[in-house]
Length: 105
Image (cartoon, rainbow, N blue to C red; front, side, top):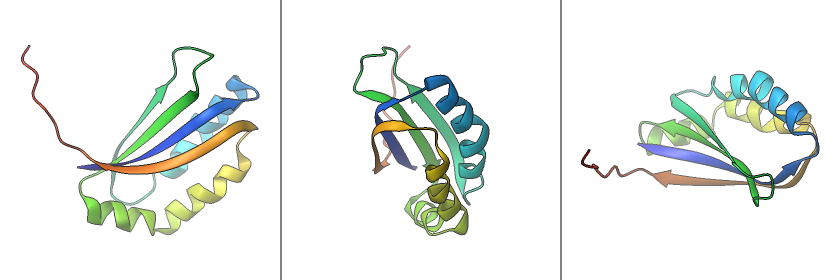
């Protein structure tokens, strides 16, 4: 499994407005990207943290990730960033291969 991480470093001017748009408008567009298996959004627990949230978009393998990134649906998601309510900071992207480590319970 592989994932694309979208890292939101900084803060929106209005968190409620940003979250409402992000979850109500943007993520439905992202969910249409071909071969997406799961989307997780991890939000910062403290207002003063450097990072607001990290979105993780999971794919079965690198070929599926590459196909998703080259798709018109991904282009639509990238275009939609222009519609985000004001975000003061940087939005970064990184891709990772996932290796699971079993934890004894």
